[in-house]
Amino acid sequence: MSIPMAGSTRFPVGVDAALRAAGWQPGRWDIRQAESWADGLRAYASPGGHRHAVSPAAVEAWAEFGGLTIPAASGPGRQIAPTTVVIDPMRGLHLARTLADLGRALETDISPLGEEPSSGALLAIDAEGRVYTVDHTGDWYAGPDIDRALATLVGGIQQVRLSVN
Image 1 (cartoon, rainbow, N blue to C red):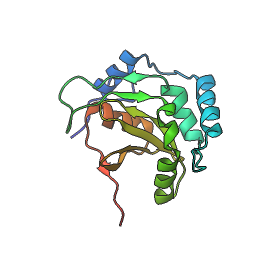
Image 2: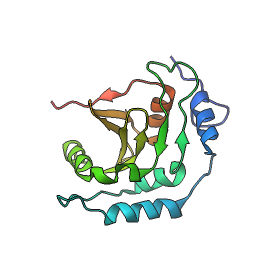
Image 3: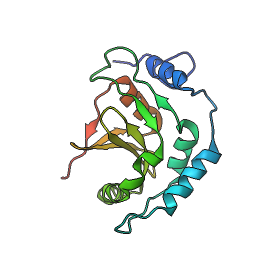
Image 4: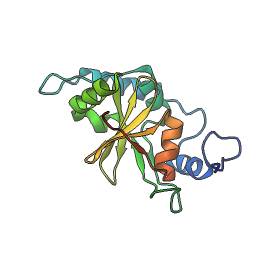
């Protein structure tokens, strides 16, 4: 089954509409805000001394989508209910240890990306640009890059649960 794509955009129609409703447009780039978030995250240390990783992939995602509250795509979702997504890495400021633990398990650096406000799930991005969610039920893989992760979350596609083998 193919996902209907909007005209010349890189997102499925409903996700593209949700992104544009949130204020995104092709070419959006706020590197000043992204660098401010990077500085704030690097400066933070948890009471246990855990620090945030900040990767170029994270900074790029923040620059393009940071500050947006992306509404769930209209309709029932492809597999599950679509969710609203907030791209704001400071939502994960106090979860440096959680992200460090996930990064160790996945053998990569993990940076905060934002949140699903309805569930409280933290969104995170690794050094390769892969996106994850972390919630009270476990850790989930949302997509191999920010584009597909947004299509998954906003479009109501079931994420893949990470498991320990």
